[in-house]
Image 1: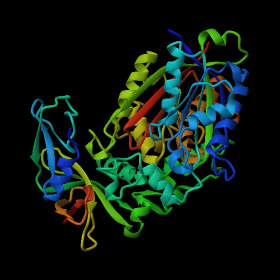
Image 2 (image 1 turned 45 degrees about the vertical axis):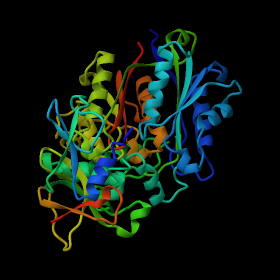
Image 3 (image 1 turned 90 degrees about the vertical axis):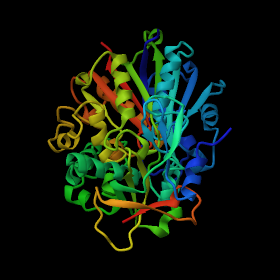
Image 4 (image 1 turned 180 degrees about the vertical axis):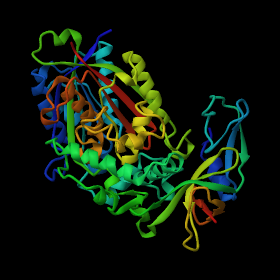
Length: 123
Length: 387
């Protein structure tokens, strides 16, 4: 038996955003799962997404959970990648840019992390 | 198949109960419901209990058995339901099923949550477990954050405004003034609601439901049993439930909640009515934007028009479609496991004519929509006046 999670996190460790493509209805989706959420088919290909996207929505978190209190405020966004894929990640900027929905961002990878937060986006 | 009726309801005051635990909140709400139904405790043959996380809040699991033994010596079957913030509503659905199937005749359904003993960051952690631990929480997202993501997407796509969201808070605080069980009894101004401290931009403090202790209980029974009772029963004529990916980014839309639409369709079909028949609704306003999205998903307003409906006063207590006449989660309070049960209690009061000074006239059909997480569970009940 294998975990459906490993491929995605392992991909991030190798600076790749891996997704599934259904070989029946041809829909693309994230994160990897056991069957296509659109048609239920379980024959899925693993593909690599582009590393650029646009901000579909974002929030600035001021009241944070205990593990993140020291980092607040910080920005979490949902980024639209190619092929109708969406992913949640931090949006980090070096300057205080005025962030807007529709802004172009690119993927970056923090190798010190071990979980989905390896991935973040920058301008 | 059995028809299912609500014959009794009971609430504790919602708010901060320093001296009370989940056990007490369950017990007091349940006693009131039994008394309201004018039945003996020994007539109850099953218990369903909605609760999110007595594990994390009070270091106690196995609470269904604790609650059963506190209220009855008869070794009643007792089951805890956990479906995030929809735990209470799903407990009602399971109790409905138990009577519908003939397994039980009279069931106690209660929801309770003790939350105020933890700090706000700790409560944020506990509630965070309702989001995806692998794909969402590592980014530091919170529930206000998830709904803020939906709010900004809704504002961007449809032009929903900050003012419209604050107007939801205003309306629900106003309604709560007439609900003696509500956590808050203070009228707020639009200016105050709009300028409160930012929790997760664009949501501020007055967009968020509070941290609350509370219990809610109802008694369900079969058609056979109501014949001998001296109460005004209310019938459950529709039940619909649906699930979805718990990870927001992986769902079909960021501006609507698919599980709401599917659960509502299932409930309307079962009740053989449409949204046009609904006279009053209790919707899950954990955040102001959620009320706007929910009233669209339930079919009351077109997608993108929910904010406008609030602005125009359509959903106020004297509007065409009153929403959250008890103050909603926003002002009545949101003790997680109790919420879905408490929504149904307000509908029962409005339908049977016991809503006191917030009583509306001519309420035949009421709808309750309770959801979990950022919308991965949705459960809809439709209640009907018994002629």
